[in-house]
Image (cartoon, rainbow, N blue to C red; front, side, top):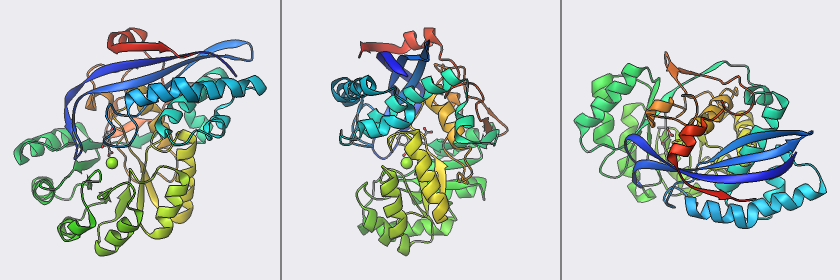
Length: 373
Ligand code: OSB
Ligand code: MG
């Protein structure tokens, strides 16, 4: 393909309820959409990408304003120079952008837009592209930190009534044993796991070990992003399986974590690792190593959520992920809503990564558009 134009839209979307993690409380999602128009074999095609970076560098070093800056200043010029030599394909994007260090979320969004364009032009779904044969995936939900235990219990009760097949509780020092015990007491042996978003240190090992008695599926990212060796040490002290999120920024990081014994399970988030193609490689490495994976979420709109639902159809995704319905976070999504039925979400069959975005909704939530090239 030959890219003709790229628009970077910044949207501000209200959340249905505040979402609190160990690092912040979000009441809205600022999301960057990449709208890419290209010439593919004489046909003009538009594709979409969604960037998972948050507004502040609290989950990872990337953030919205920085993604816009690096995309306009370095990433897009690099792609435009590249396509003067030969036609661009999604499979070439990561290699083309590799000289620019880091900025994986920004790169992922651009690769996603190129891939969506390529698939739409070919009339192929993302599931076709990946070779996914499952037609639906089980749906789990990530439940934020609440002000009180009774409020948490009510929230979990509502999600279970909706049909969610696995509950993930956000934890942090001061909100760990008591909420987990309360959920076990209220709902018994449901599939349950916790996510600390790097809020602990190895010094907290005795406290974290107290989680072992609750039969959790896993504990996600208790320690800092860089603490691979310490995660391996903690994993040896606990019976709860160790799962990494923030630490797994690439296929290399995944291979290192597995080799060190730092990850019995990996949360795969395409944006965090530089794109869906790298996410697939991590799936392949983990599967070959006997390490289970599941698909994480970053409060995606229907664009990223649909792509995640297809990725999660790969055979190594043996654990239920955070791919929930649109209405988990948004009253109005910017695509036809992703719905959950009987605890499952359908693997999309439309051409491209997602259903056609709804222009009027995008316009409604847009606070800024940059004509990047
Ligand atoms: O750690 O998985 C995480 C949301 C923002 C940043 C990090 C995380 C999360 C979630 C929400 O847990 C997952 C979702 O989108 O449903
Ligand atoms: Mg996480």
